[in-house]
Amino acid sequence: MPSPQNHPPFKIPPWLTALLWRLLRIYLLLCLLVTLFQRHLLYHPEVLTPQQVDQQAQAQHLERWHNPAGQPIGMFRLAPHQPAQGQILVTYGNENSATGCAGYADDLQSLGDFDVFILEYPGYEDRPGKPTEKQIFQAANEALSLLPTNQPTYLVGESLGTGVTAYLAGTHPDRINGILLLAPYNHLSAVGQYHLPILPVWLLLRDRFASDVYLRQYHGPVGIVVGTVDHVVPAKLGRKLFDGYTGSKKLWEFPHDNHNDVFTTLPAIGRQLLQLWQVK
Image (cartoon, rainbow, N blue to C red; front, top):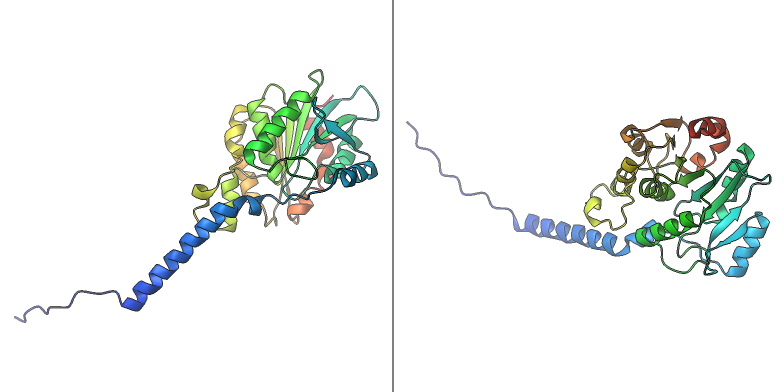
């Protein structure tokens, strides 16, 4: 009977050990860079002088919206015929601004007599401050508190702003009569994971915009619009948010729309949206 052969223990070659350590250091460096600069990746504010903002607002037929202290917090345009059917607060995406949302005011007021208010985020255009989830939520709370309480209130959010809309709906459910989410996500970490699949984004992310969590506290009508070729916020994330919502809801899917195309769909869905919101 042959005796078993003794094999020397396997040893990782020194070159492979060095390579693995180098890759680990690169990976940890990437994690560190994402942690340190994530808000620069997330928020892209256009900073303007007050004069530039005033010029753009005038060209778009928008008026300055101020808080009681006289500080600018956004823009508004009242319905041409009063009393209005309701008021709509718009929260935009990370590369937009209040004056850049005049198209929403046009589209919404073409559907009915709505007063349209557009929240400006801290650090955008000429609003002081820095954009963070906490600061944006505080600004959104203030804006909602300044809207009249004697008429229906609706929310429209685009992209990053859908997380702000979900937050307001979830924390002030009795104030909100309906919402529309354009290119939404269930959780911002899911968007980050899509773009950085090799990194533990869920662990690194500071500003989370947990739309799915906030909407658990809201039970009003929710409209969701996704573009199936959206490579910024994949449609599957909007569908996941839609599937998890238990209240009255409607999903619009546009098969050839990318991210920015989704923002132009209001004229196509407007009448159905008003039915969903039960606007009278």
